[in-house]
Length: 209
Image 1 (cartoon, rainbow, N blue to C red):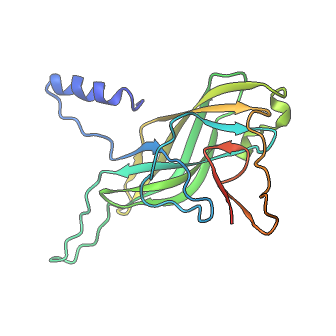
Image 2 (cartoon, one colour):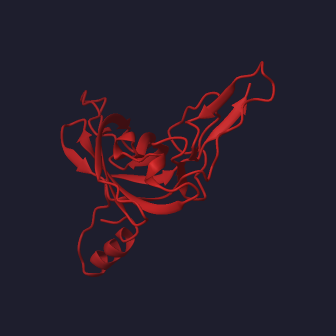
């Protein structure tokens, strides 16, 4: 179900006297990039991006994003009885389809293994435009820009072996050829340029140290 429709659906079902359970695992936000020198995320986004993610095909053919995800399943451990927690969620697969824009991008599926603790959050490393999508500088004319919607769904298992599937999460992406330009080298030749996560996309951070 589209996450934007979820509150409406829950309200309608509640009005009809139904019992409704919200999705246990769901994506919630696209993170701004952390300090370029460390390029390390915490358990949540320090900040969210305020404009669509972007990729410049003249520089790179993949887009990396940090996406915050929530696991609403409660920690079910019990020290008194010795029962361990089995409600941590393990995201094992990301399925992505595309719509809109001037490019026909095939649906993709990628395997992964990232954990979201019970009753907690985690930032997952996602490639909404993977290299396997086959986009190159020749996919768009130089100076051309288009926008697509990547619709993402995650699948995985809990620690007890039961499976889950997240609601759909839409990511607007600007795809261009030559719109961003490469990051210039450090003015001081003694310094090193750090980029998180890579040149040719937004969001990113960079610094010279």
